[in-house]
Image 1 (cartoon, helix red, strand yellow):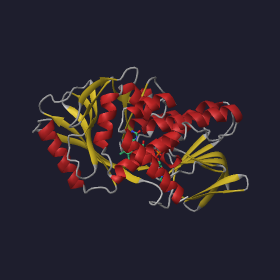
Image 2 (cartoon, rainbow, N blue to C red; image 1 turned 180 degrees about the vertical axis):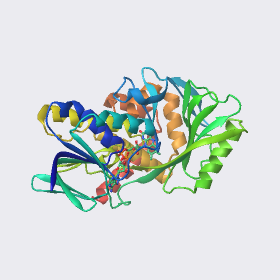
Image 3 (tube, rainbow, N blue to C red; image 1 turned 120 degrees about the vertical axis):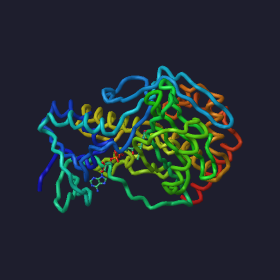
Image 4 (cartoon, rainbow, N blue to C red; image 1 turned 135 degrees about the vertical axis):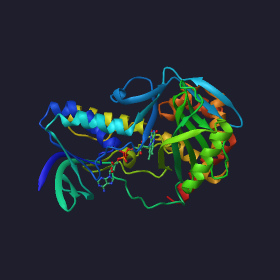
Length: 385
Ligand SMILES: Cc1cc2nc3c(=O)[nH]c(=O)nc-3n(C[C@H](O)[C@H](O)[C@H](O)COP(=O)(O)OP(=O)(O)OC[C@H]3O[C@@H](n4cnc5c(N)ncnc54)[C@H](O)[C@@H]3O)c2cc1C
């Protein structure tokens, strides 16, 4: 049986982020790492967007960045300067190529393609079964999706699902300096839905139709909504679809197991997907940086909590409001953007605000609805505990 110091199970966003961040630690030690994924990642299967104040390690592959964002709905229509934040876009294909390049230079990393069939711990080691072969390690970091038995009587479950098109228009249509974070000028019949626009230049953009609801739609439904938005809101009749992106991101307040002895869960599997927004990339960066910091400090990758637990409660309340139909996403986000500075909102959505800042922000929202939902959600948790 082959033994490694660490096995990174899943070489997607979090697995690769962790591996690249571990490089200085590996250089200082003789540790050996195995990265396993069932596919060799080359395709541009995702576009990651996030906001941050300072450049991080993946800045060399930031494809576009914006200092301005817009938010629109039937209630408000605003454009914001978000500095000192910048909204950044990374294409998955660039990220995979860049991380391959970073990781290839060391003989301490072995990368294999294989299907992980099992992952377990016994005594002091973790074991990973890959295509029938067992590998052992001191610690395994897994981003393989965790199967959870749903408990709808206790927790909220929604999906954020979307279809995006990169389109090229005949006429200049987009302001390349300003990305559209949310435009709720869409039919709200399928759930809370909005369009998200990442302008690449005046004649091309990635436009995504996104819905928060219990179930995905048929591809035809997303396509019809995109076509309607492009013709009616952007007043654009002639365009070519250059690329497509489809995705489903779970939105839930179901607690996630972050560590099982020497198996540490990372990425979406490790609770990095924010329940209320689906944003994950920045949380992955914070989580993997915290793991490596701990490795450098103590030699053990103990999982660090990267934000206080109360933010999960806020996400739970938001999901409860949407699930119960008490408030729509359009109303909540419109009020938030109408009455708070964009920087404060981004800081809050990053789980980085202080309690005082959160009280100020909640004071501007639908207090009665939030209080009822907090109460109902708490009762639900107590009843099913
Ligand atoms: C289309 C799309 C767009 C997104 N856009 C954004 C965004 O703009 N901003 C943001 O913050 N978040 C975004 N997300 C959410 C999140 O950032 C991504 O899902 C991110 O890839 C999660 O990283 P991860 O490492 O947890 O999972 P992944 O990147 O999916 O990595 C998991 C890896 O495990 C491998 N794997 C799974 N099962 C096995 C197995 N049995 N054996 C071997 N390997 C296996 C997979 O092949 C995969 O490579 C998006 C998600 C999607 C789907």
